[in-house]
Image (cartoon, rainbow, N blue to C red; front, side, top):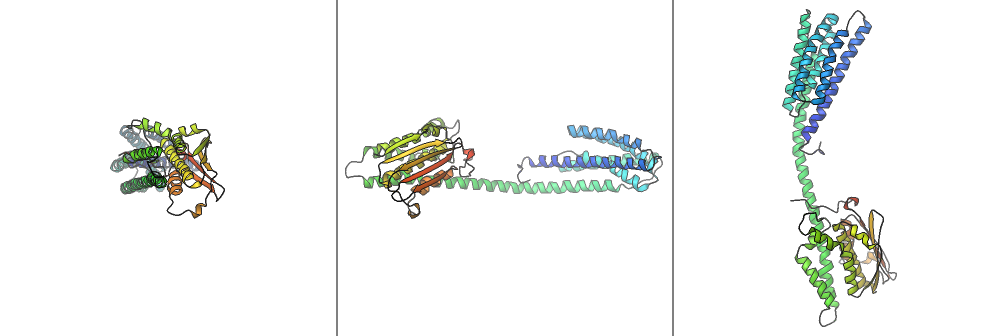
Length: 414
C-alpha cells in the first residue's frame, strides 16, 4: 500500500475488497448448489431443483451489479435476492426441514451473498450499511419463506459470522488506510527532502569543479605568463568565464537540470551548448595546443544538453591538463558512439603520470572529470604511466534515461 499514491489508495483498496467479497459470495452460492445436488443424489425423494432455480435470479443480478456497481444495481440485487430468499427458504424448509442443521446452513449460505455483494463503495460506513441491509433482507426473506410452510425460526449462525467479518475487515482496513496515508505523506516529504539535498550536493560539486576550471586555471596561467601585457586570448577567456560565473549560466547548464521548452532562453542555451565541444577545441588551439579531432563529432549534437555540458567541460579539463602538465603541445580527441553511449577519448604522447600518486589537492581529474561524468551516469577510464603518455576515455549515455544512475537528478518544479 505504501507504493500507491495517497489520493488513489482508498479507491484501490475498496476495489480490491469488493472483488474479494464477490469471490466469497460466488463461493457461497457454489457451496449451496453443491449441497443441494449432493442431498438430492443421496435421497432422490428430496426435490432440490426449485431451490436451485431460486439461485438463478440472484446470480444474474449479482453479475449485473458487478458490471455496473451503482447504488441502483445494488438495490436491484437486494430486491431480487430478497425474493429469491423467500422462495429458497420455503423450498428448503419443505424438503429439508427434517434435517435442521443442513437447513440452517443453507439459509445462512444463501444470505451471505446479500451481505457481501450489496455494499460496493469507497466509504467504509457505506459498505457496512449496505452489508447490514443485505443481512436484514436475506434473513427476513428466508424467515418469511420458512414460516410460510410452517417451519420454525432458525438462528443463521454463518450469516451472523459473515456480517461481523465484513464489519471487522472494513473497519480495520479503514484504520490501516488512514494510518498509512499519514505515513505515506511523511515518506513523500522525506523523499522530496532527499531529492533536494542530492540536487544541492550536485550543484555544489559542479560549482567546485567550475571554480577549478576557471578561476584556479586562470590564476595559474597568469602566474606562468611572461611579464608584460596579458595575452589577448587569455584575457578574452577570463572575461567570458567571469561573465558566466557572475550570471546563472553555469547553474542552468548544471547536469541535473535540463532546459525545457518554453523556459526563457532555453533555445538559445541549447544551441550554445551544442557547440561547446567544438568551441573548446578551438580555444585550446588558440592557446597553442595542437588538437586533432577524429571520429564523428556530430554525435555529440544528439546528446541531451546537461550531458553535453558535463562532457564538454570534462574534455576541456583534460585538454587543460595536457597543456599544463603533459609536456607536449599535441593531443588527439576521438569521438564515437554505439547507439547507447557516446565516448570521447583525449590522448596525448606526453610524460604521463601515476594517478595513485596524484596529490589530494589536485582536483582536476577528481572533480572536473570523474565526478562530473559520474553525475550524468557516465564512466571514466584513465590509462597512463610515466613516460608513456595519457589516454582518458569518457563515456556518457546518449539519453538520461539510459544512465541507470540517480546522479542526474532533475530539479523539481517549484
